[in-house]
Structures are given as structure tokens and as C-alpha cells.
Image 1 (cartoon, rainbow over the protein chains, first blue to last red):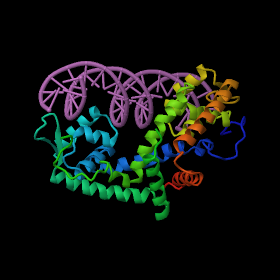
Image 2 (image 1 turned 30 degrees about the horizontal axis):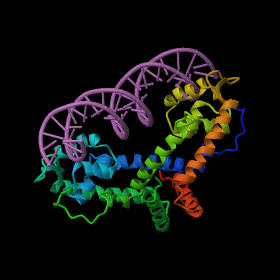
Image 3 (image 1 turned 45 degrees about the vertical axis):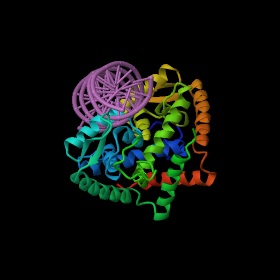
Image 4 (image 1 turned 60 degrees about the vertical axis):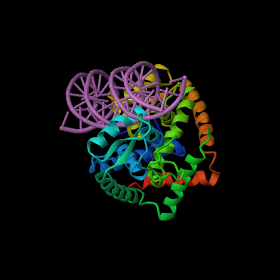
Length: 155
Length: 155
DNA sequence: TATTGTTATACTCTATAACTATA
DNA sequence: TATAGTTATAGAGTATAACAATA
């Protein structure tokens, strides 16, 4: 006997009821997506958060660490080592800001821009692959709904 | 001067480009939802994972820890203390299984069923609130899309 | 006084290996 | 040999407080 006879079993997954919650499905889907993304970005020696940070610095050269932390919704303190790593790899640089010696302007290097472009292409492929069960309309709808939740978040 | 003059600034959030990714939006939305859910379940002294586990045990009495771990996609080892807590609070019990002394049948107590029902009502209210910017159709579509991703996940 | 970057630290979550008892 | 539950532990991620330099 491979399973308890003490319960009815309609052959449904045990988490059937939880799948009625949007939040639970968000969590399970994100877990799948993140695992794949980690693999993809690993080939560039990037973590998801490093990729996000680099991508923003490339698009917004001159941004400082406080602004970057706010954009990524992470703590400034947790950004320090992350920027250290990207800086050590010469993907970006902390450059002085004229008139305010507290701040650094984060500037992407040529290597940083190049790696970012390659990583972005890989992430785009990753998204096309992991969401390939959705057609273009469905994927657009999903994106729109998620953005609506973020922009109209209550509180 | 409140921001660097070294960059163009169209007034857009710094993560504008990242919001083109479904995965990034999934992560940011889940973060918002989880923070709210943590507050809600905190009033029952439950974590999200404890609630999920209790909810499954209530619906599938007799399930064992290995099956529960598979359903929640967490490691068996990480389930032990979680079940310890729920058991210490007398919300469920590890009961012997006739014919296999390795296994426990997890059985909800009356208190566990009652707490679960109250928590489920609170979670339903939480979902209605945090997704209140979506109408019923939109919320149904979001749920359907997320479930489709899970059920048709490639690999 | 407030802000920026930084350090140190603690806490949670997750993953892995190894053990026991049972099958 | 394999399975169910358990223990211990290590790593990643995240949150908080306090500090130095500067505004």
C-alpha cells in the first residue's frame, strides 16, 4: 500500500484549494521562473538582482546608490556589496559627483553595457521560453494586469 | 540641487525598463502581496507556509509529511519544525499509521479546523483588498493565466 | 540636523547531507 | 535497499542599527 487509506483521494493535487488564491499561484509561478532565470544569468556570473541593478545603471547613468536602492526596493546597505562586485568586475564605476562628496554617480563601463545587452537578450529568450504556453495576447494581458496591481496598489 | 545633472530624466521610475519583464513584475507584486499577507496571518500567529500546510491538512486529513512537502514544494527537512509548531499548538496531530510505523498521518484537530476556517476567511478578505484594483473578470483572468503557467510549465 | 554610503549583525528562508527506524 | 521522518548546518536573502563623512 503506497498511500494512506484514511482519506478520500480524488486524484487531485494536495494543494488544490490553495490554487484558488492569486497570491499562492504568484508565489509558485515566481519560484519556477526564478529558478530558470538564475540558470540563465549564471552564465554571465550575474544574479537576478545584479542584472537588475546593472540594467538600471545602464539606462540611467549617474544614478546614485540611494536612488538605485529605491528603484529596486532593496536596502541601501544590501546594495553596497552588490555594487562592489559589479565595480570589481569593471562593469560600472563609482564616480565622484561635483558639488556633493557624499554621493557617487554610478556609471556603466563599455564592458558593463556590452554584458548588459547580452544578458538582456538572454533574459528576453528566457521569458519567451518560460511563458511559451501563453500566446502574445495572453502574455500582454498578464503583463498589463501585473503592472496595474503595482501602479494601483492600495496603501 | 536634489539630483545629478549628469543624466536625462523624463520623470519615469528608474526601473521602467525592467517592468517590461513579466518575471520582474511577478517578483515586485508578490513582494507587496506577501507583506500584506504576513500582517494578516500574523493576527493568527501563522506564517504563510504554516497557513498553507494547515489548510492542506484540513482538506486532506491523513496526508503524511512527505506528501505535504511535495504539495508545498518545500523540503521534508524544513517541514519538521513547522509541523512541530502546529502540533505544539494542538492545531494538528501526528497520528500513527497502522501497518507502517515510519509514517505519521497528519490529522487536524477541531481547534485547527476552526483556526483554519477563520484564517481562510481573512485571507479571502486580504485577496479581495489587495487585488481590488482588478474587477472580477480581470482577477479571474489573472488566476487562470497563472494556473496555466504552472500546469503547462515547460520542462 | 539630515543625507549618503558603509559596516556589522541578526533573522528568515532554503538546500544538502547524514542519521534512525522502519519497510 | 528504499522510504519517512529527523537533525544539523551552511548559504542566500533580507532587515535593522549604528557609524563616518559630508551637506
